[in-house]
Length: 219
Image (cartoon, rainbow, N blue to C red; front, side, top):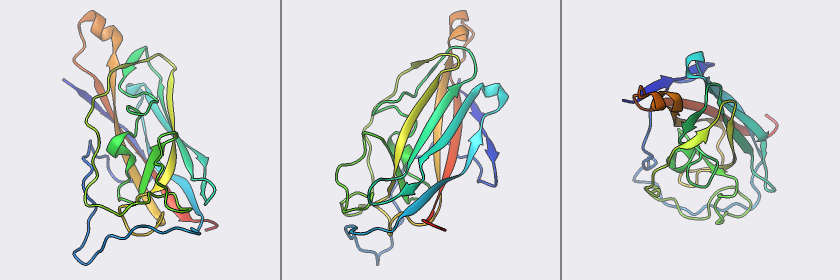
């Protein structure tokens, strides 16, 4: 049996959602697929708009740090997501690698669609001009590799941190459109002591979210 822990809201953000499957962006019959062209993009400012916070019972913390708050032709905005173990030694299904980081696969895509967060080192190479968006026509669906993530040591006071580049979502119109964008993720935690004692009933699943705001630089 999986125990699920829901993190409380900070600020006036929407209610938590569970795991989601990333589908196709909404598209009308009159829309045409156009390849992005970006020669001199306007700078954008990226800020943390809100996030969930863990209860004391979870003994788990999650933070978002804005490492670079401006997106310019020279460099994208960057954010770091850190997961902290405030309890005993445990195991977690997240690690800072190219496959099992906290925002892997569809979790790196915002709701509403508009932003993609790519792990530093794993960002696409098909950049469109001077924009931080992919140089390809939009398509009606986005697929991901099917693989599972294992259980990794998560010692007491440990932190798993991953830094992401903030990219535009090439499947929607516009470029880094001003607005607020939400990212949802789930983390599974296993209690080693409970497993050794034979009292463990499965992982505790923590649902977590945060929001980024995008504005024209200088606003």
